[in-house]
Image (cartoon, rainbow over all chains, first blue to last red):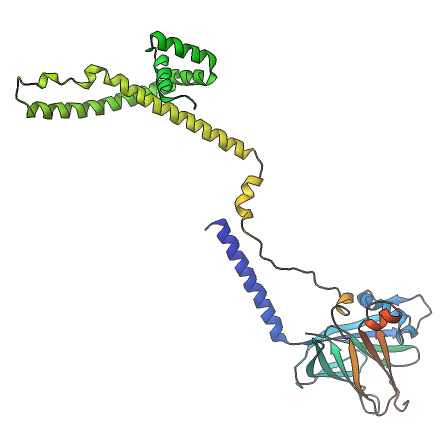
Length: 163
Length: 211
């Protein structure tokens, strides 16, 4: 086989590999990334977990984050979402609370696919009904649900949908 | 090789010492003036070529004589004895061996010079570096695939036509909450901040009855 023929075969196989990877990703469906951030008031200098550097600007300039001085990433995981009102996923947060999320559907606005999510954070040990939040989020765009535990600390759950 | 065939044959005859008279004087002058002519003569006088030519000549002469003998035999058979067969002269008797040698020598010299020219071209092409070797590969075009680095987490949240996050509903029957809109995409202010996508923070009071 000539060298040109070998190169042509290699390109073809590369295309098959890329196509297979894209097909595999498409069959996985959207994922919900859940990051749990512990924030606390501190007299020490500002401290931001290195894994949260992409949020540094928001954490240091925007309410309600600016109330706190130390930010630690407690956990980060991705959960598969079932589209169009599929099964609700539940995730036990390190704080003892339970996060539930479901994908209610998708819409296309201005040529962009957006995800309609319903999330619920419940504290089994605490009285009262859980809090439900419904949002419409662009892909890879985070939003936060914060729970103020006391005057000196809070837990922020960062939620991000990956297609 | 720039010599005409006749001159080449004379050069070979000169190398063999078989050239005489005006032809010899002319070839001597040519050899004195032309380095190429000298190369031809020296090549012809080379022991290796001479030995090879001798063997080649013997083989060709034997073959030619075999054919001539066969023709003569057939002619002798076809004509009656004492007829006009006396007019037939054998090739060997007319110096045919010499003419055949000149032809063989001419062919060998031309072939030798052509081989030398080929070797010279090959060596000169090898001295041009690796660019020559890459030439055939250059005709195979790389497929036009745009390969982009994956976006960093910071840029992934703000790139493209992202419209950010909108809150449709917050249902908190027993707890207080607040919704903060935060810009994504840096610390811009004013119109720059408003133009980019935004996100939200829903802040919930964990103490029931705080609503």
